[in-house]
Amino acid sequence: MNFDLTEEQNQLRDAVRALGKRYGHRYFVAKAKAGEHTTELWHEAGRLGYLGVNIPTEYGGGGGGITELAVVCEELAAAGCPLLLLVVSPAIAATVINRHGTERQRKRHLPGLADGSQKIVFAITEPQAGSNFHRLATVARRDGDDWVLSGQKCYISGVDEAGHVLVVARVADTDDGADSADATPQRLKPALFIVPADASGLTWSKLDMEILSPENQFLLYLDDVRLPGDALVGESLDAGLLALFSGLNPERIMVAAMGAGTGRYAIERASKYTATRTVWGGRSIGSHQGVSHPLAHAAVQVELSRLMIQKAAVLYDAGRDLEAGVAANMAKYAAGEAAALAVDTAVQVHGGAGMTTEYGVATLLGAVRAGRIAPVSREMILNFVAQHVLGQPRSY
Image (tube, rainbow, N blue to C red; front, side, top):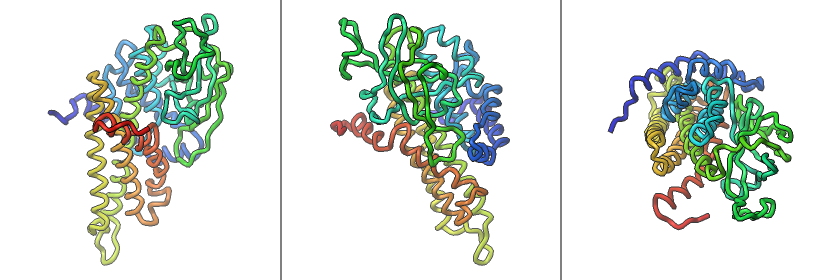
């Protein structure tokens, strides 16, 4: 059993760390407060090949896997620049298209995803469906050679930055001749569609969030959005369910990596502060166990989450999807809890300074709290583990 990164992976980590530190958390916060995007960082990361490390070389990528992309995501977050769209565009969209798209779709979209010139965001969540994708109300129906999509999505990240949206809809299996318009929800199967962001009938409105982030969240409306037949990911509807799940495990791994990196950043900031802040006779506050022990506990939790992230990524890249699913959910749970603990502890040991923008930790409170909810809540992960690992009856 080897817990070491390869020489190439270590070089990647060092290079991304250096890039992230050149921008840093002040850049991230300034962009978020100005209502701007981290465009410069994104484009430089793309130019240097970091956004496409998981994309095959024949499409302009680095030929690696989710392991390498998780390294990129974690190191940028550890530098104070957690980029949410790393989770969405190269991790979900590129993986789905590479594994299940047609050759035409791969040639059209993967090179732009690899160099950062193109972003594809992901639309699955709906107001009424919650975590139950079997109850998605967005429906695609055939109209001649075209597809027509109708429905509503919510909490869709970065639509305003994207050229396309990867939309999860439900389609009637009409092999028996039934009309798709009359199909019951139980007869609808999931399918994914690559929808141009400027498609007629596709509109969106921004959601106001209590999260300091350069990436925005949106409500998405699809009002009879007409698409050509080749907008469907894959050659047939049979690819839909596999394509969907091929993107969900990388999503969980990448969110976990972002959480672990954020936790590392918070602990590093707090440790520097507590080692140099002196009170009560000139001793640093870090010499008191009431300060150092909570930080040490948070550091242990972050490091444990990193081990599970590494396991999940390695399993996924090895094609062991069922095992990767368990590990990815556990990694997301562990990193979500660890990041929230690390940031909260960092704020606390800073005292009043922890709530200021200058010290750069309270600016992450909203994001790490959201990490315990999205993209799958901690409660649903516990349901998953109880059912699929512990063999308990389904509770939902």
